[in-house]
Image 1 (cartoon, rainbow, N blue to C red):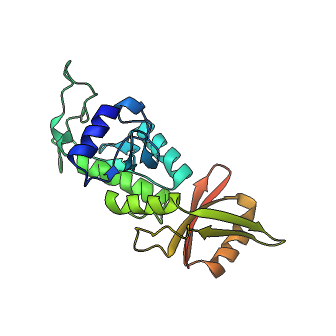
Image 2: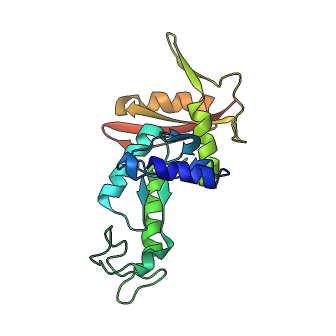
Image 3: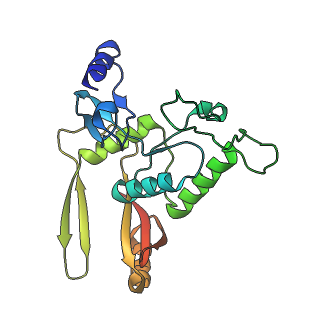
Length: 222
C-alpha cells in the first residue's frame, strides 16, 4: 500500500525498480502496469504476470495475454517451492508444490519441478522464438525505452511504415537499443507475401500459429 511504498523509498532510496504484480489489487501490490508506481514516481514498475515451476492452465493463459499485448513475459519462481507440499490452514496462498515433486527427481514419477519448468520454457520458446531471456534490471530498462518512445505510422500504396522516435531529451538506459523486435498478425492467405517481404528487409523472422493465421516475430536493426 502507499505506506509501505513510502517506507521502502525512504529506507532504501537506491531501489529504482519494483517487481510488482500485473494482476490483483493495487493496495496489495497488484494491478500494476509498466511505468511509475501509483504511490511513488521514484519507483518504476516492472510487474510479473506468472510464477512457479508447474505449467498451470490459468497461468499460461495470463502469460499469453500479457505477451500478446506487450511482448513481455515476466515470471517469478520461489526457491522454497520444493518445500511447500502441505496446505496449512494458516497459509494465505495455495500450496505451490501440491504434488510433492522433488527438484531434480521424484520417487515413483519421471518428472520434477525442474523438468516441469523446462516444459514451460520450451512451450514459450516454441510460441515466441525470438523471446530474449534477460534480467529484471535490464528488462526494466528496455521497458523504460519502450514507454519513452513515440511511434509514427505512414501508409503508402504498397507499404505501411512505422517510425520509432525517442524524445530528444530522453537518454536510453538500455545498451542494445538499435535492435527492434516486432509482432505482426498475418491471415493464412497472406503468409507467402509477408514471408517474401520480411526476408528482404529484416535480420530474421519466424512465426507460430494463432487464431486463423500466424503470429509473425521479426527483428530489425537501425
